[in-house]
Image 1 (cartoon, rainbow, N blue to C red):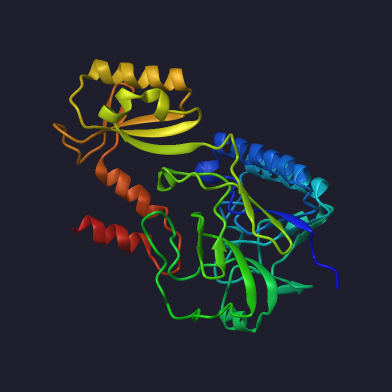
Image 2: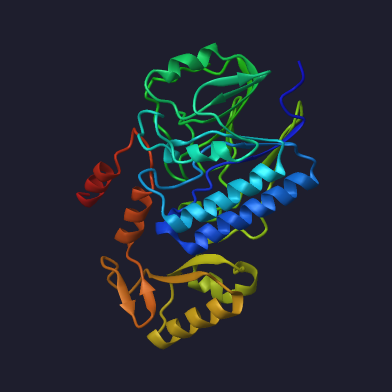
Length: 338
């Protein structure tokens, strides 16, 4: 039997509609897909795998976001012989069943195949978001490659929080599979035969300093190669004393930057720094964070200079955690009672 693919291009967790249907984010997504196709075709890829979370909002899709999404899917359908679309948890209306998912209409786009259940073709298996007793099926799969959208224990959900072991997925669950490539967690990481490929590009400050995102190219029987989108936004956190020494080495176009005020400056100086750095280096954002001589228990806004409190930063980090095993509201309640 012929192999399912000769060389495949893989993307995951692009999240159309993120940040309240931000036009900037949706433009990033569409531009990423265009670069993804250009890179894949230059490398000779004939097949595409999308391993989940194409959309961000599982309950409803904004019409403007939907138009960006449709345009991108049509581009993928035209570019590849076959596009395998595996719905992730954000693509499902219900988190605990796969009856309704937000890209069902993509079946009508030529060359796009929605894989919404366990499916194998040749020596390749596909596993969508697990619901019910699906985890019991994993040990029965035998394949060279598995592609899926999986929430597995011990892997990092972001830079700080690892997925707990609930006991559902046993060690060796993928013993019959040579290589597992999955979406869901956005940080690129590998344990044994399982690899989280990393999402398309950094999305927020949970990704600060970690630019290992983009796309994966997999030639049958060879090690994967990873490519980073040159236009990706980046997130960084610096101390002001560090930044003032060599801003030209630290600031790049499209960067989101948080700056800790570890030295005393006046309001006028803060205004000058923000405006000058944003304009000179074409930053998307520069936020100043007070760390001394200012009460950091509340957000502070002086003119057009926004100072975020530690509470705001921690709250934003906790609310971005998505897992059946961590309740963000409970974590917030625990934090607030510390």
